[in-house]
Image (cartoon, rainbow, N blue to C red; front, side, top):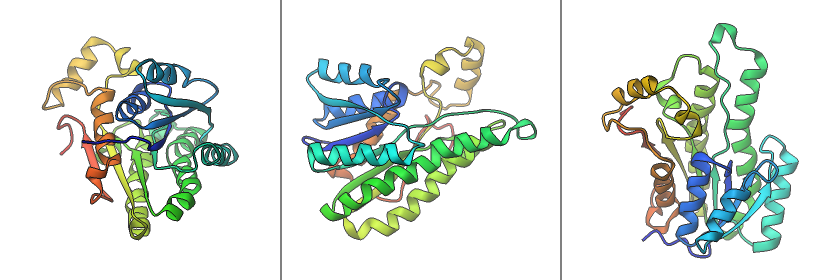
Length: 246
């Protein structure tokens, strides 16, 4: 099940955390991973994938730069002749209470988390439509579903991904392209590991499964949505949050 052999997959923000987890899991199912991140930040991801016999390449990408996105897609098409799956994972946070939030903190988060998804989708859509096949999966957040103090910009961007994906799913369904969202809850990454033990205990109390998720938990949901087994699923939000929000 979930065989992705010979599929060409672009994963943005693939250098670490959830993005790296997604790249590694999809590669383990046979996909060729285009690990996109700033500079050579995704080199470690590619090295890990190749070390286990997988196929991957690293590409420098600034998701906020339309020219960089276009160049990435053109390069992938030249080298592989196809793009089967796009995973919009790149994202940032600039947390601040609304009263103190600066306009640039709002703009930076919206540009990276939401507008960049539009730019990446716009670039891959034509070749997907031409082949009448494709999977587009965007990584939202539980914060986009339930909100969180100090994260108005982040919540807006992640909620926006959900609305964007639902509208897009209706537009491209007739071309056999599915569009879905995975909304992680609290995931164990470098950032959360640095949080004090007391705070993590408080977080766990909010989660019925009483633990933080892992990048692999998220990656497995993405893997399912990318597979042929999910061919009849589109416009959906898969929550991977341990029951934190239902």
